[in-house]
Image (cartoon, rainbow, N blue to C red):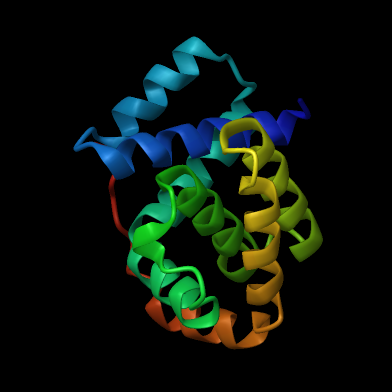
Length: 152
């Protein structure tokens, strides 16, 4: 697994666990980093994704629901939902990751953690979202929270 894919994998694990429990994301991240050692820059990359996505979950979900209505969010598996949130955040908010890379990485994570059809599903949803990339960027930029500390 490529180094940044490993970091995204850690981020996905943390987002998934915090989505399904009341565990604090900082605690979950510390546990994951104890189990899987990452160089400091990759740990920081994972941390950036986690604490970038978490305060934006609702706006990300609204964008996904608006532009991909044929896939109701409440019917999407939690792992798939978090892969979509991460990829959408990476290409629409973070700006560090080119769209094609965000999609490819999401598909790789889907192959690792999802069901047999998850990779195709994630690719399809993200393809639909990318068709509206500029609109999504504008919507999400307006939703960015002020500095939020979720690490405790």
